[in-house]
Length: 555
Ligand code: NAP
Image (cartoon, rainbow, N blue to C red; front, side, top):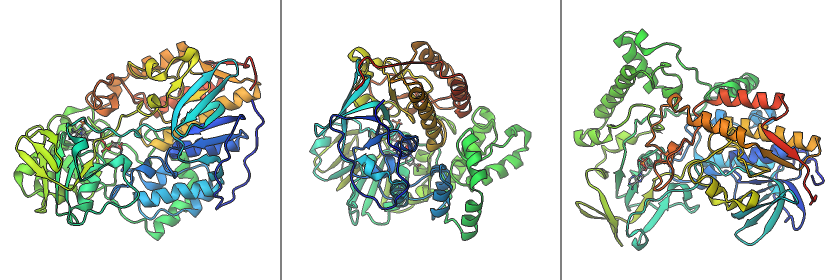
């Protein structure tokens, strides 16, 4: 391992760019300045490793850097998404709303990197094109689009599970003469919607935030829906001064709850079957859920809401009745009511004023199952009913989930094996953090780890990566590789635990939204507790799933 340097104390406001590594070998090269990568950089430097982070964008935030579309916001409570490693950070940062919007979230990540003097270790505009393992030296050579090469002992790809936008292959897209933007690559210069005719394709968590946000500004917005989802209100509101004081005073207990909660939220599941309540009590309970914040509809519901068809169907009927009561046009209301799945079959979206927006005369819904899109023309969208002229197209069509970013990094492991090839039939991992044949390569926050509030389980994985790296350093090892047997065991466990998850195989959690992608489990249906249990066992037993060795030639 190369010379390590201890991270200097926090010096807010440092803005210098990271120096290029040249021929030197950095201990830890992190890819991606999102919530996971920033924490990884912080932990690596705090532990005394030399560490650098490279980021394709020109700023920090990851998802919260790229997704700057109107009304992009958390649907995890702000304080449950932020970092828990510093009490001072917790006390000095005040979130303004229970579910903060993108500008505030981006400010938070900038605050963190400056507060902990991380910015000078980050290179921006550095899009990775390849990462190639060199066995004799036990190092990775990472090349970026501008031709720069960096060498690293360990590479941590914190590239995210929802970072590669998917745009369906509809003919004529390149011919469109107006503006078109994907939600996940939204321009920094605000899009001028005033008086414009807009088409929005896609109605997932991103799309449902945009429609009410721009409805009053645009001349018209036509929403092309493939699948209706069970949207319920986000119920966002400002954090009151009393709540701010409570949050500050409760750091330790909140941290402990979040660090051990199965979902990574503060929510508590209702330890009662829906059938233990009377029908009247259940209706009252559903009404409470409708009025409660964000994910509580899932994570504070009856424990059997997703598994008991009677309860699930009844909750869906309750939501359907709400939709019919809000949306004045009965035909539109029927289109907005999901038909093919119950609550929790797909990742539920949360919205503010989404159903209400369809009562405006300039907001229209097209169900593409009834009225398919045929092509994009120079001036609009052609469906089976004719051409609808628009000025702007919004692609809210989702992502190549889980493996999309990792498969695009150009990673080549032992014997030149491309990761993309190794994972052609779906990912195989150990604890969702490493894969066999790719030594010294880690991907916290990647496939087979995800379930619940993202920063919480990805933070568990970063901590585990740090345990492995510290063990290697303490024992004078340069090369860390997971065994094929350990990888197989975890991958089989994940693939064999489908019944523990309510998500349908037709959802993006199995890659079903990407044409040609293997339909494989991309989440961790065993849950966070199993992941934590296996991590703890691994640490306690000295990392039996890994082989540790010295490199033949030290770089
Ligand atoms: P998404 O949930 O995958 O939604 C994309 C939608 O577009 C899907 O309904 C998809 O249908 C549809 N679609 C695909 N091709 C289409 C076509 N040709 N025509 C019409 N519709 C088409 O993507 P997203 O809304 O960007 O959200 C992704 C994830 O990001 C969320 O699930 C959530 O985890 C996260 N997110 C979180 C927040 C938040 O925290 N507030 C906000 C936004 C996003 P199929 O699924 O059938 O392909």
